[in-house]
Image (cartoon, rainbow, N blue to C red; front, side):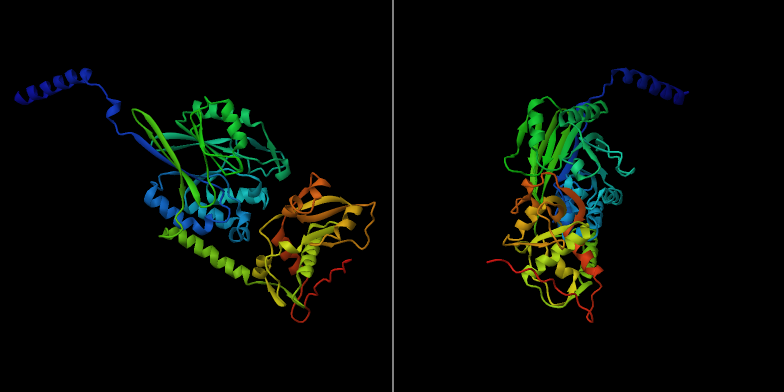
Length: 446
């Protein structure tokens, strides 16, 4: 009987306390999330990734942080460039990159390679203001935004791009409408924090935000360009990062909502995360092996003029056009006599620049021959009244030669300078018994 009374009293006690109890939300600890955003990988990410990941591990709540990249740019460093971006994808995996945006330099190896990089890295490609056309690979189909969750907080991420039809199967859509629609969708799906990655300059995004200061975008990260600056636009923090930097955002959600974002320098010395270092070292070893491979055997050590003409010939033949052009001042190192390795070619050439195809009247071609630095591989006969297609690098087109005034809309050949030259050299089939003769440039009028 006593046991029954105790039990009954216990039940009554529970029923009496329940109505009077109330849940105090403010008594719970705040939810804290960390978001890390780098600029494009360019020439530093694969090599410095192990130190970056170690810095995140010790200072940035990694691996629980949400890691984002405004672009990958694998062609801007010889290490990932020789392997179509595979080292960049591997380091993105090691760094837990969740999403990235893309721009013109991210499709230097073609759209299929971009899809492969996305799939092998495990990161999402986000294009808020760009849509793939019907010619794009079926597997591309990037979403306009993504929703991630960290520590119970929903984070909406956007990717602003400058891709256009000139870069491949892409259609740019009006930025203002794309941002507004995407932000509204993200908020309707419960986004408590919104971050926008900008591939390239922030100029267009800044002007759009100035006109819409009420938009609930918390952070925008872009690359530094002339005339840009960090600051606040309404409730949005706008920051810019260059190579070797990242943005660190700490957001706290409790009785009040607080956000703190800053640009952080990646340490240039110190410990490296072992797993990421192993990834980097494996690709560096493969690079050394690739650099050692023989691509040709030259009959003599070319003079700068002869090397420029050899490269111009390679561009003309590989691009399958009428003429090719290169300049001596763009050579970074001499080519040796005898065995020519891939490494020697890479050391002599500029970075992995795009090859442009430019429509040029015959009269212009004949005038270019007298340019003091330019050397051209030409057809047997040039008709001054004829029309020709000239292969040259993007850098030469945009600076120093003046052909942008001749053809304002060059065609991107989908070739990059070093692979095009290496491919042509290998195709010549030279060896020590039959070395490749170096082309002799024509004599110039004094």
